[in-house]
Image (cartoon, rainbow, N blue to C red; front, side):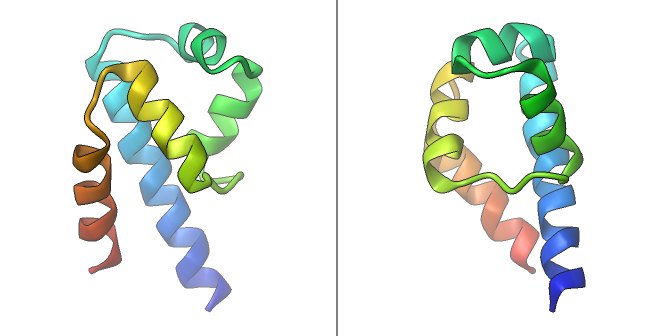
Length: 79
C-alpha cells in the first residue's frame, strides 16, 4: 500500500510541477507566493513530501488555476 501511495504523490508532484512551469514560474517564485522555502516546493514536486488539501488550494490559488482543475488531475491520478 505504501508503494501505491508513494507513486501517487510522485505523480501528483509531477502534475504540480507542470502546472507551475506552464505558468512560467520557478520553484523559488512559487515558494515566495506560498511563503515557504524553495526546497519545500521541490520536495512536493518530487513526491518526497505529501501535499495536503490546504496546500493544493494554496498552490492552485498562487498559480491562478481553478482548484477544480487540480481536483480533476487528482481524479485521473487515482485510476
